[in-house]
Length: 135
Image 1: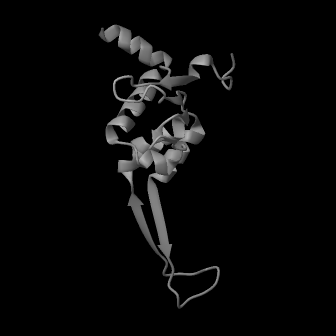
Image 2 (image 1 turned 60 degrees about the vertical axis):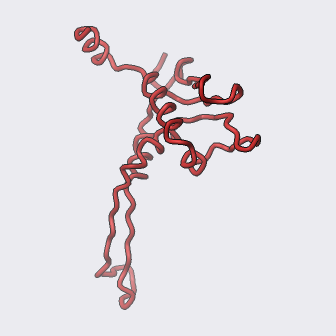
Image 3 (image 1 turned 120 degrees about the horizontal axis):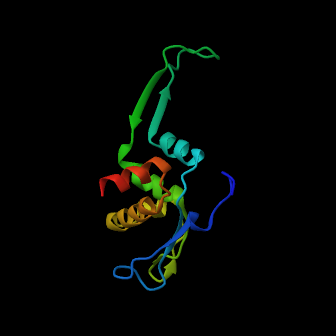
């Protein structure tokens, strides 16, 4: 298989029989693509630019930039980016998968999904060798 070919184990089904309703599950990708990495990194930095209103034109000076790092959102953004589908409900109604819906998840549910995705990610060749030596 080529580098761009998706494999069967690139998508996993995540269930928590102890804490979720029997119908609730989610499907997630396990392979992080360059576009995923860039999207998450870009979401973590919020840049606001305010221009001096007294000047106009293409070459405005005196613009002030406010840069804010939002590192607390990293796990939530990764989970959202990797999720393909879910069957979660709220009040008996299907809850559409969206970034806003992921924000509303209980923290322990987000952590559970994030950890399952992390565990299922393919290991690079060097990682497997290092793990076998430390056991």
